[in-house]
Amino acid sequence: MSEKTKELFDSINAKAVLLKAPDPNFYYFSGLSVGHFFGTALILRQGKKPVLLTTRFYSVPKALRKNLVVKTVENSKKVRKILGQHLKGRRIGLNYNFATKKGYADLRKMLKGKAFFDVSKNLAEVRAVKTSGEISKIRTAVGITEKVLQRVPKIYRRGMTERALALAIELEFRQKADDSIGFPVIVASGANGSVPHHMPSEKRIGKGFLLVDAGCRYRNYCADLSRTFFVGSATERQRELYQAVFASQRFSLSLIKPGEKCSGIFAKAGKFLKSETGFSLIHGLGHGLGIEVHDSPRGFLEGSNERLKPGMVLTVEPAIYGRFGGIRIEDDILVTKTGCRLLSSAPKKLVEF
Ligand code: GLY
Ligand code: MN
Image (cartoon, rainbow, N blue to C red; front, top):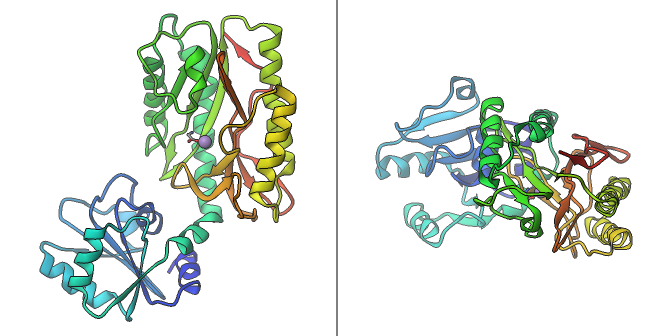
């Protein structure tokens, strides 16, 4: 049983938890590749290997077979039998964030006498602190992403559309990282950058700020970096604005240490950004990063009671938006025993090309 499975069972009063793909927790505990094995299920068991209920349409990679008890099921009768055999105890944990009304009703019918309960909070807590193995995968994802983003001025061709640049970046991720992309690449030129999650359009990239937000996925783990470039030559004021956002990021990083409340960091960072740039922070300062791009912990948000712990991995992404577009500098950090460590390194100057 993995250390994380043990941690989960230490926090609940049950012998079994049932997870179903595409719940990210299914991939987290099985190691199977995100986006595959749709509709198959995983039984987490106290003190034992998880049982994977799969179909013959999927093949389980050899390297993972030793960690799983693989059961290939052909029909619902067999599913009922395997569930009955391996879901020990009366209380069965489910992730209510992924349980549908229909799925829940089916389970109740299939497994009479069981009492289901929600383990979503326990799962989030277990996943908030990363193991050294997870950190190393995130580090690799961040390294690949950073290198590709540094190449944006080289990948860019005059007259290129936002979509073409986004696709070129995604292609590099797919070539360099085994599991491709963490989320669709955001490329926003000029005024389009004022929408934080702008969808790349057929607009040709023109003079002005160019915001690229991207992250590859490596062995299931995501990176999430935003870089703001300038196409053409920026004015002094535009460079100053970039530097002010960068200073806000450095200030934010200086606040991060174990025990700190996420909402407190959000408030202080927002105040600093406002005083440096005149703009308010219109979204969270950052979020947890892991097998999901927005992972546990939820992160630096208003009203969040979460407190930082060593081993958490989060993004730090101060940003300003206006008619000029957007400036966002997003890096990924690891909370250490005394503060935090950057897993990536933002360019200190605005890159103009
Ligand atoms: N990079 C996408 C996001 O943070 O939501
Ligand atoms: Mn982000």
